[in-house]
Length: 185
Image (tube, rainbow, N blue to C red):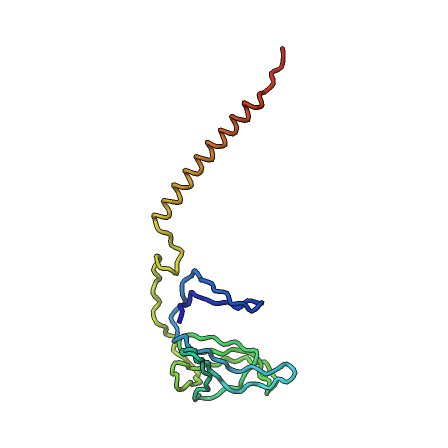
């Protein structure tokens, strides 16, 4: 699996473009090897809600879809909602509950820390692993070596001096070719 700073982008013309991201990776998370699909509807014409929770396992190719065992009090399935992963929890917020025809003001929490069974919970422990400060000289940062910096400064100075000498030579040549007419007194 490529690190997080290597990203592929699917362009509108269906070409895949590789992008190297120059930034620090986010805080530690779960394995980053699952894509979770929850809720939603099939079409605007018939807003039948997808009642299942599906997971795409991307650890091995070919990728594999599966439906995990789920315990706890299962909330109504939303559409048009937001879901974010924080630590080992997926937090589902707001959206619409089409079966009851209202906008959902609630927040639901799914513990996804155990691959074999997910669990709907009513509270969570927001303790995250400690965040380590990134190495400023790592590939993720914007570091420039001192040798490169010195070379750039010396190169800029020499280029500036040569450009000034060249400009003075052109100025003197122009003055010789076009002498100034002196008025007769």
